[in-house]
Length: 236
Image (cartoon, rainbow, N blue to C red):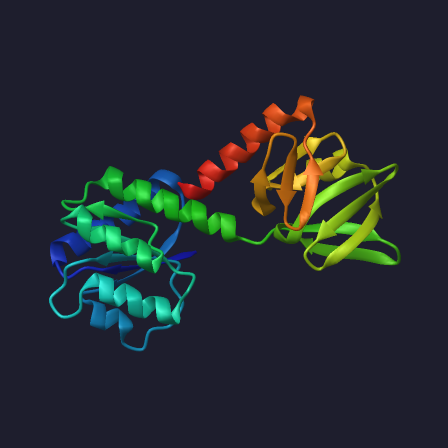
């Protein structure tokens, strides 16, 4: 269940946005728990970091949305903020508080649903995914986001990760299949790279965390396409 807060001082707009969320659920099947507030002061009163997404009206009578967002950010670094505004130039300031985006009034369902779709996609990317790896004496549960890359070593695979390196029996192809839903791609036949850990791509090398790996000519085009697609999705 995704928790959404709507902060809007116009009662008609507030009700319309709630209906938009219900309509989104009918369209996509995503379930939400919605809380509504008539002013920035209301949501800040005894604020707890329980919301996943907050839609904030920029212009409100008692406490404007930008100030509200700044105070929310001091208490909640993770919540996704989306501004609702009459004028786009106000929303540009939203990037200083890490806002995802803004939607212009009067708010049509399509524009609202696209912002909600984007916010839900970002939440899904944050969800931790784990890979269970057989190691000597048992199993190791590894957060896939912490992996830099995997290297094929004969009948074993070497893992390079934030919390240390280790090897496990198996083939790179087997682990590649297990990681199919995660942002991994081969930069050459022997390396499977976590695209989220890529810092820089040059003509024939890629910087992955602290490691510099060779990008083979046969794999370069596909690897570049995978990285471009990942970066584009991250920014959308």
